[in-house]
Amino acid sequence: MSQIASKHKEQRIGVFVDVQNLYYSARALYKKKVNFKEVLQAAVADRKLIRAVAYVIKTDVFAKEKDFFGALEKFGYEVRAKDLQIFYGGAKKGDWDIGIAMDTIEFAPKLDTVVIVSGDGDFIPLVQHLKRAMSCKVELVAFKKSASSKLIEEADDFIDLEKDKKFLIS
Image 1 (tube, rainbow, N blue to C red):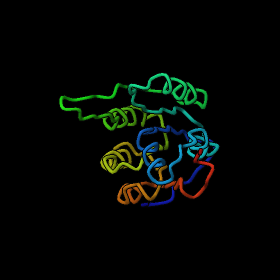
Image 2 (cartoon, one colour):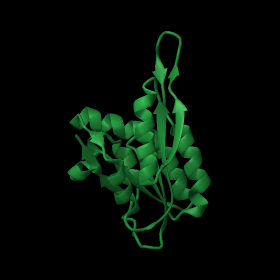
Image 3 (cartoon, rainbow, N blue to C red):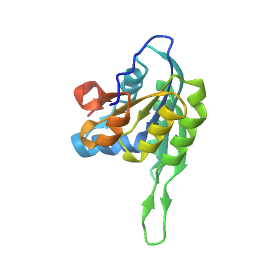
């Protein structure tokens, strides 16, 4: 982390959540699910929330996902969904990296702080751009054990979801 970001009540923040990254990290590390309500509360930290977006991938079990997506909306997230891509031969792909990057850059002029909820090292250039070109503070929320150490280093502040059990659901 380059510096500790100061947090104050008037600070305008946007929270951008890579749901798949957190889901698979929690499942691999703890065999549990993420408490996205607690994640949002920790990310906001009594500041002025301008926007919270959860980026999800729709798969073939849409009935279960529909309830989950509805819960995310109740917690205060705008849910952006796209279909899982299945390629010839069975390979699957589903990520929102470019979409998250585009949205954070679009909203950065309206924000003091961008909170990226992901440990994906692909976001390193985005964090660098938001800080350098957009003059935003960037905070990261992720599980340290599965997060890119370079991404953590680039962020102004880091919340390690491993530090508190409230972020996990059995």
